[in-house]
Structures are given as C-alpha cells and as structure tokens.
Length: 377
Image 1 (spheres, rainbow, N blue to C red):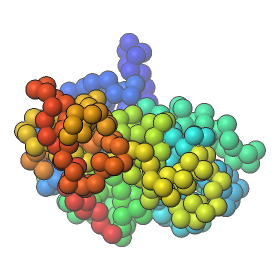
Image 2: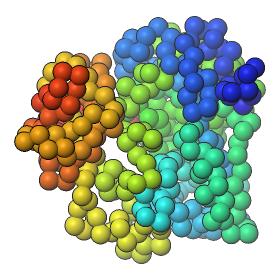
Image 3: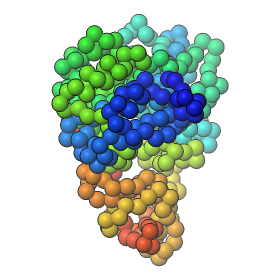
Image 4: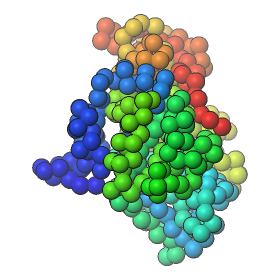
C-alpha cells in the first residue's frame, strides 16, 4: 500500500482504477476508498442480481507461521474460541480474537492452505481498522517457534453475487470446484492467486488474494465481463446489513461477548468444555444462563430508516438498548436495523419503539437475516 500525496491516507493497489471509473473516494480506516460509483441502491441491486466487484485490499492479510499445523493452530486457539486444530486442508473458519473479559477484539477469517507443503501456516484476514491492534495482540502471545507476517505486497478482491461463479470459471477453473468456506491456490488467466468461496454480503461469491502488482490486470479482466460492475463501500454495508452480518466498531467491540453478539456458533463445542481461551468463564456462563443483552434484528414500521445510536425503548418508554447498524434495505424494500436489547425483549415478534427524528416509532424484533443467505454449500 502507498500513501497519498498529503501522507494522511493510504491507497490500495486499485486506487487509480477507482478514480478512473468515477468512484467517489472517502476516508475509511485510514484509506481512500470508493463509497459508490453510480449509486448505492443501484450497486446493491446489481450485486444481488448479477456480480459486484469489491476492493477489500485495505483488510489486513496476515500469515501465522509455525513448525506444523498443530503448533500454529494451538497458538491461535489460545486467543480465540474456535477449534482450529481440526481445520482441514483448504478449509476456512470464522473466529474471534477475545480479551480477558471475553470481549471481542476483532472478528477474522482463518484459512489452512490446501497444500501440505504449507503445513504450519494459517492465513488470517483482520478488519482494516483493527489490524495494527490485532498484530500487537497476537504477537504478544506468540511462542518462539511461531511468527506473524503482514502480507503488505498482496491485494484482496471480492466478487459477489449469483453470477460470480460463472464469471470466475471463465478465468479460473478451480474456482468452480469450491464450496462455501473452502479455498485453494489457483491461476487466474495465468496469474497466481489464492481463491476462497467466501465474502460478507450474504451472496455466493469469492475472495481473491493476489500480488499487488497483478491486482489491476485481474480487476480489469473481471470488469470486462458483462455481469460485473464495480461496487463501493456503501452497498457493501447495506448488503451485509440485510444479511444480518455484524460489523466491527458498530455491532462488535471489546465489551461485547460472542454470546451477546449472537455469534455463539464461533465458540466450538469442544472449546466450551475445555476452555483455555480468554474470557472462557464469562462465555460459558452466558451460554448456560443467557446473556444480559442480545444482538437482534429490528424492522421499523415506518418508511424512515433508523440510524446507529438510536435508543431502543420498551413499550413503557424505558430505554432497553441501542441501534448499532441501520439503514434502508433495497432488497428488503424497507428500513432494517440491528442493535442490542435486554435479553427479556429479544424474542422475534416483540413490539418495541425506536427513537427517531420524529420521536419514538414502533419497531418489531425480527429474526436475522433480513434477506436469506445464498451461499453455495
């Protein structure tokens, strides 16, 4: 990554392409990133119907390297609640870095290479705004025979939508063999890359890690396909919100536990019994007796979206929670939101109120996601 002329924002390897395509650039996690090209709603709908190309090179690509898989996995398990020792070749897993109080430092993806030659190496992807914090935290816990390396020479692209697979197979035959949360090393028109069937939109799709100096060629090739358009951060946010996927710094933070965040699936059953990860006592207690609050979906009854920071109120007007993400869902064709409420009010169908510009308005607790996931399993 390189810095801009005023040394205040970083640029991804695709910066010049974003500008050429008319992307409206905004600061995001220390980077100049495109928030939209032709409009958030249009880009959102295109991704749901066709295939959208996202630049996610600002994310923190890392390699955790040890002498063998068992050692590397055990090292990461000391910081997360996932069962990473059982991760198979070419498999991915969503997990959480936790602090001693059981709060979430970051959520991340962990991938084991499909090649036995890379045994002992796990690929990690950190959130952009947390990667330096994550680096320090992970490195502080490493034994002498395990090291963490930043892949600053790589870009990361995400192709998402129902036509993503058809497009990818024209250029990368191995992509069609993947199912959700599987990964492989591959060639894209002769360009070496690492491809996973994953993403954060709720749609079928792929993430492609490639050398930074090859990223623009690969992106232009994808954009030349009739089904593909460039998509900015605005639609990425509305897509993940409809999919009920939490965003760090909004729906997740260092005070929030996996159980409160409705991410208990990330706490492996074997780890619930054995513990050995930060905050295990709190998390096991919340799994047994329930958390004091819970992340839920909210459907305002009006047409006006509710925004982050709005109070969630009981029918008698008592404040029982707060909205952490909110906006208009173009596919849902209605306002949608997520937030935390006291556990007693978290049952779907419960009618509450949400504070808005015109005062308190009715809203209903709704099961997540708002739009069904379409992962290829």
